[in-house]
Length: 182
Image (cartoon, rainbow, N blue to C red; front, side):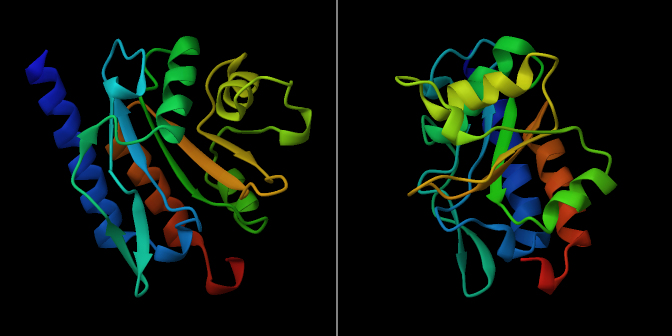
């Protein structure tokens, strides 16, 4: 088990390195960004590795606040744990800034995209559990987004089998966006 945890941490470190090196920092949302990777049998956030303190924008650079650790993300970890109920191979996710102008680029990259409306969230449900589940019934898409709600920043979530794949998909998008789109 310790060996598996080490592999998970190494892959997240590799993905974060790619993002630091090549991602447009304008893709980082106001609330910060995280990229996570779950153990194959993940049941809680303690089974999911991410960046403590998130990844932030610092002087137009991508800046991870802490090293990689298990239990470091609640929000993005819940996205992965929910997606894994529909497809256990989808063990990684990251959140990036939402912009209407990004949506056509996601389509151009041939990503499978799904969205949910926070206004339709059933009472007593957690948004990520409900929103992600509502998008995964026919299979887990590459991207899930929402346009936010009062006090909730709109967000794009990129999902994949491992964090390096997720980071590479974010970089494909990063390479296509222009200054005007963000």
